[in-house]
Amino acid sequence: MALINRIARLFRADMHAVLDRMEEPDLLLKQAIREMEAAFAGDEQRHRLLQHERMRLTAQLDDGQHKLSEMEEQLDICFQSNNEALAKQLIRKKLTLARHIQQQESRAKSVQQQLTDLSQRLTENRTQLESMQQKVELLENTADDHCEHTLAEPPGNPVEEADVEVAFLREKQKRSLS
Image (cartoon, rainbow, N blue to C red; front, top):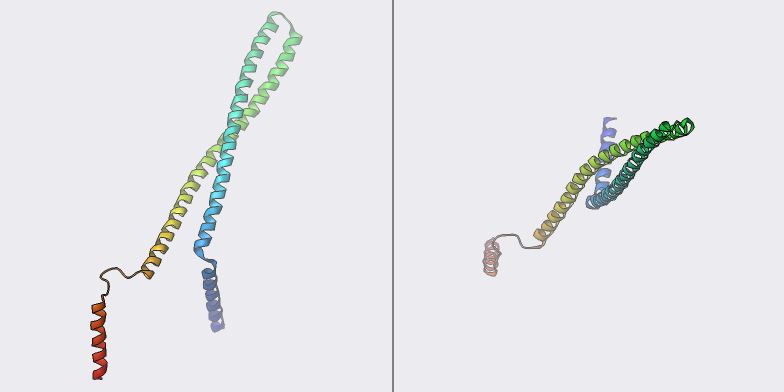
């Protein structure tokens, strides 16, 4: 039974090695980088949308606060003229606007939190992406250097024709003595 388990494990290991060689890791790494870049671009787009949303909410909140202050002035006028019916209508509008402002403030806090989280994630992803790109460049440079070294003559003193002639004569002499 142990022999069968060993053979099965050896077979699986060989199959994994064959698959690893077939997958071409450099192509997989480049594909992973492309996917990371696409995800990063999507996050950047979302970040810009959230910033736009935050600016829109800020403008709405400012406008709402301005309207509230105008309503306060109108209420003062209503109470000075003893017009309670109109004052009640303005109070109803003021309460509605105040609730709307609260909802907008809550939404603005939520958007700000999303922006903070997304900014942090973008920073981390940018660092990771740059690291991966540097690794690919390093691997490509290493592969290029390896190809150049295997195709070119080895570094150092090149073999001259005279050296080849002397070595040839020595080899010939050894064989003639035997």
